[in-house]
Amino acid sequence: MRQMLPHLPSRTLLLFANSDTVRVALEAQSEGGGPVPSFKEQRFPRARASARAVRQFVGETLAGWGVSDRRDDMRLCASEMAANAVLHGAPPGRDFSVRLTREQDGVWIEVRDSGPGRPVSWQPGSEVERGRGLWLVGVLADEFEVREEVVGKTVRAGFKPAPG
Image (spheres, one colour):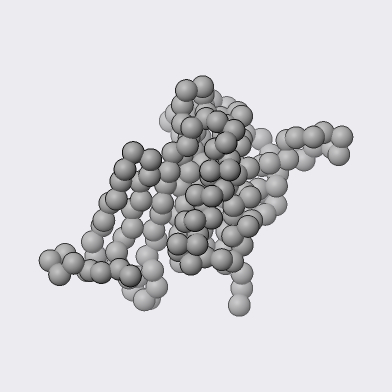
């Protein structure tokens, strides 16, 4: 599938970009023989339909990487983080970005927006119809954090492969 060009060194950084997607892949092997970290990132508009588009983007990316373990959990968490960015994070007229990073010890999903404030994870009572998204992400992901940026914030969820 991957062809190394004869005139490029074995550790080459390739950048592929268009107006909607940026994907960077390190075309090399780690010292242990496994794949080096790679990532794929895409921007989405501040629109309710973006949560579905994020789920699809994450599912297609994971399938392309051959990651099937916990794919449904990752897709759900990504769509919850995206919905949070749409409803509370990205200011009107601004996009947000979703970045997936595959590392040797798992997959990270990051949703970054430029809005103010820090999201709060809480578990509302059974009478409340909404507000469980980040709590659910915290339960399903192996690691969960919010990073404040110079402008906005990044919500990150990490997923380790199942043992065995």
